View 1 (cartoon, each protein chain N blue to C red):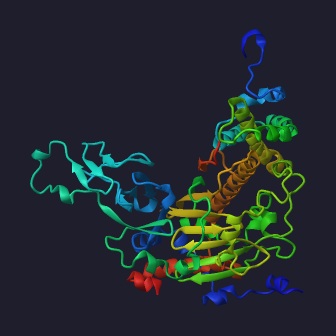
View 2 (view 1 turned 60 degrees about the vertical axis):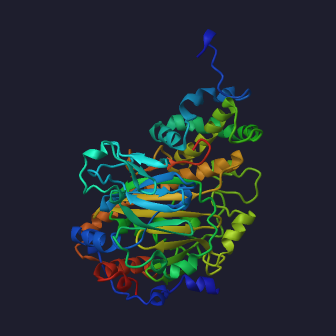
View 3 (view 1 turned 30 degrees about the vertical axis):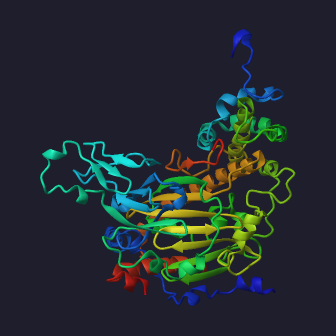
Length: 119
Length: 420
């Protein structure tokens, strides 16, 4: 929070509704976003999933207006949030819970090199 | 009934085509300490071992360090000024210390952190602090980094831990060389890498990736509908052939695959792009050229999803509709292995493509996790089976051939005999 209780602006104008998710979900790498999903409560994942999915098309359209490897900081945050939706979908659409049932966590799987950028 | 439907009924003839026996096979190689030690000596210290793609060392000066797990060897692999890719033992000839601690980088010289002996990336010793206090037996010419036999075939870098390999790499690759030769390895410079330590013998793990019989059950939610359908409910192979000590198989693909409407995130990724999904074939010219290679979908089947080319002992080169990926299974001990999967992809140029990549990578992570979880149970059962043998069906022919080759290598007096 900045002065006068105003929310700091981390996302492009028009995406204020997603501001509350930036700190937690806009992780720098795929591996970080995976940890976020694995360690979040299902309710929190669902809230993020619903909010981000409803703005998914708008986000995609806005990000498309910039070169992918040279996004301005606010657009980059939006891109990372959008990418986090892929993680959220694993919980919501695949498992119905944050992590795979019967699989150990933490475990030895490491994503040592993700896709570029923000991977 | 069509010819294709016929293929998925009754008993197949792939095993017969390999010229293999159909008897049960022993489980002992999957858990015995004695057998593990035999493998280390007769296979991992005699066979050519794949370590990395040449694209990991794009320019002179680049180096990588790769652990050859079960052997304890750390291979320092360099790209020299003369353009050669060469592996060395990452150990200082002075008193044995590890020389390079980084896993990759760029340097024309390496200095041992212990006493600052300095080496060129050709392995030559060029600097010894207080050299005059050494004795004449320390000849700098003989005190370079110890070389490991290294050869490169179409970008695949192999090493051989034998002091003098009995056969060269080309002879070792045998029929696999002609069969796979000339493939255009798309995205080879741009891998996405997952690693894991698996609680399973390296063969237990490798076997799980050369049969699709388990896919409809173990990966029901993640990829089950991609590899099976009403036509082929048990995901039988569509083809398989031996390539000397190596082998290749082709997997069935469900042509009816469509995005499940519940997968709203995938639908978002394919927004406005006809035919785009996490698994949809790439229609670019490069992808078309890649697919035109005779080893990719070798039976030219309309029900094809991917090929698995197993290069002995521990590498799988998998090819799909638009790309390739690799699995490596390094033995650590008789019941643990180090697993590494590398997906080679094009660099995304649009957020949509990047988003689909992210979804793909997330799902793959879940598939690896399913295998990691399942393999613990497989290994535990294997170690105490009460029967000591396993029964393989026709579509598990690659497992049968792989184990037969492993046993053959452990018994062969010479590499030529093992390859015969």
